[in-house]
Length: 414
View: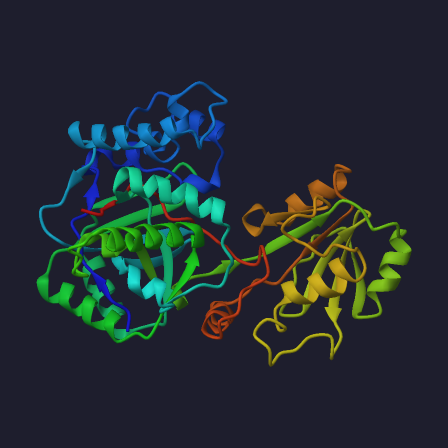
């Protein structure tokens, strides 16, 4: 059963929240972070992208960079830019995009639940990326940024969300990207007990986004337990920072592909090969978006096409075989274009659906790429089915938006 607890959040005073809060560390590079933090000493980028405090070009993995993160985290607390709550709370964190709001519960999730696979993953992680975040957690002795979880819809927890969010928010602002962020403190002991109890009834929680951060947070907690001769299991390091959303609140958006060449084929030959497994329809110059599962949109030679996979080319009984990312990877990228390793092949690139179909057209029209493929997005049900069966999704399958804002609340490990 999922074990969670409230915690004494470290967070900015209300009037400073927009100065402190930032985008997550992994959605922008060092130079972009340097630019966004320019003239703002309170920006969380000084802690989560600490290389910006050094000369441009400084290696973000240099030991002095991690040390600087910890010094800056301490300085933020000394200056009162981050203040620890005096008692343990859960929090509600909501995000608004395109007029739609999703409400999550901020929890301290359990390290053992991750190690024993009650917190389920659907993606492979890379050890080098885990190690980078582990160093960051170790040196700060804190989870500075939350991970993004989903849980099966729960009426009681929805009732808690509704009750708490009927009151005034502690933080309420629109970030520069236009997304709204709203944050409430759960102060009522009865509601706090209810949240703990309801999560305990759940067999599993699901990582939606942030597999590397989750692995790093859990592995550092596990490491601390092994290094503590007096370990009891209730220490703060046995928990890490997460925001958990009811699955129905979340919307996965498409994650699309652009390819540099047709593997020696002419456009006509390529379309001929596609017709073996797909019903191909030319749609003209108007943007065409996939209409449902097993329908794809392709942009080639200034025109959009609809590709519908023929019966028998996919397996709706298999949690991986049903995915359009599997169908397109096998029947188009591998069999026709000769791309077998999506993680390392330089002929392919990936475009998050947040950028729109216009970005696919632009990449092809510029001559940088030759063909673009847009996919119908994966559903939360598919994601949870894959995690439940112990399967792993192919690379670059899911894109969640909006991303969690960092700096609204931090969890200390001691």
